[in-house]
Amino acid sequence: MFDFRTVLLTVSLLAGANLAAAQGTQVAFGAVKADPSLPVEVTSESLNVNQEDGSAEFVGNVIVIQGEMRLTAGRVLVIYNEDRSGIERMEATEDVVLVSPPDAAEGDWAEYTIDSGQIVMRGNVLLTQGPSTISGDQMNANLTSGSATVTGNVKTILQQGAN
Image 1 (cartoon, rainbow, N blue to C red):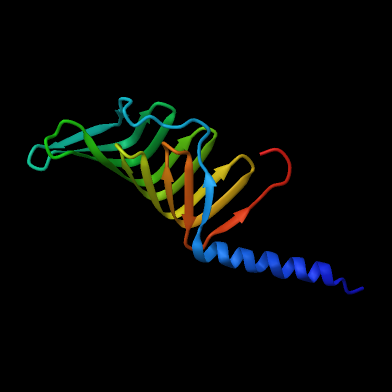
Image 2: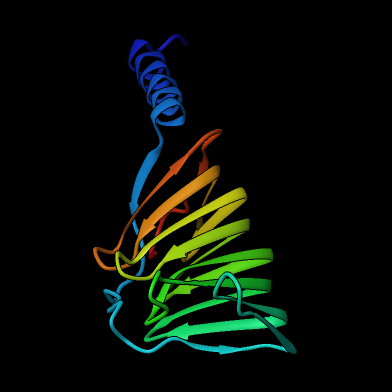
C-alpha cells in the first residue's frame, strides 16, 4: 500500500541529510567548558627543542592535558608566541584523539590554538557522543563554548534512546 506521508518524510530526510553534508553539522562538544588559562601538561617519550624558531616537538605516545581536555597523538609540535612567554598553538599528528568529556573525536591531524580554545581536526574525523557518531573531513571545535561543526562528507549515525 502506497503511503504518501512516508514518501514525503523520506524525501524530507534525504534533502536534509544532503543539506547537512553540504553545509556541515553543528553539535555540542564536551559537557565542561574549557578554561584556556589553565596550565598545559605534556608527556611523551622524547622532546626536541628548536631554539631558533622557539618550537618544541614531543614525539612518541604524546599526552596533552589541560583541565578536563585530553589530547593524545604520536607527535605534537608546540609553537610558542612571539616573545616566547606562552604557547600560541599546538599541531598534533599521527592517530590524534581528543577527549572533552563525555565526547571524543579522532582524526589524522589537529591544531589547538590555546588562547581561543579552538581546535581544528582534519582527515578521517570521527566524533563519538555516547552511542552516536558523526564522521567528516574536518571538525572545528570551540572548547570554551562547547560547540563543534563537522564539515565535508558528513555522515551520522544517531542511536535512539539515552545519549
